[in-house]
Length: 310
Image (tube, rainbow, N blue to C red):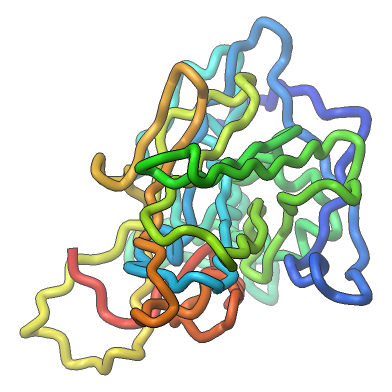
């Protein structure tokens, strides 16, 4: 049985934009107030993982001048909000759908009867949709996602930060402000994500590090990417444009990024930013053709197109 949630919701709420498109669109979508999930005083820090979207984790190269979609999510590793956060989940216990009901709310058929999974014999667990969460944002408390009070994303040239280093910051408690560069969004897949479009025009080619910092009330334990099924190439008969769905989450390889516990940051090295004449991806989208779109424009946290072997 699930324990009662113990947390404090911010009195001030954030106005949550429906889409990143509102950054540039002439008419913005309606917004809804969303609670910030704080632990109680003395309860300790909420253990979390910072997820980096697939275009960031798997994009091999970018071209100078492109808009690169920077996108992340904060995953709750102790979503039952018990008194001391002592039963932190392992990454392989996190469902790929972060909007899945933590309390075990079942999927119901047209007669109100729980639908049984034929593989497990257990009721299917409900995944909250964008409509569900936009209608009642408090349902976020029954998911594996966390709404934080503020977020800082710093991008710098990994070999020499003095050449390029830029910080993007948003404070969500007082609602959306004009200077909030990092947007909070519930996307079409029902995922709570944070991000923006990074303009690389005129930037020095090289490998850039993206550093995500959140307040210490949320203890960053992992920097993660999607995990995909192992694909044996000779057994694959599908074409290159077939979607390979993620099966969960895994820690970033050490050569790609990780966590700095002293600063409570998660880091990832992006694919190399190369000169325009050298080729590379045209943006941050699913297949590199969105001209600055993101890995989640299809409504998921970052579905990858094509075959993927591990």
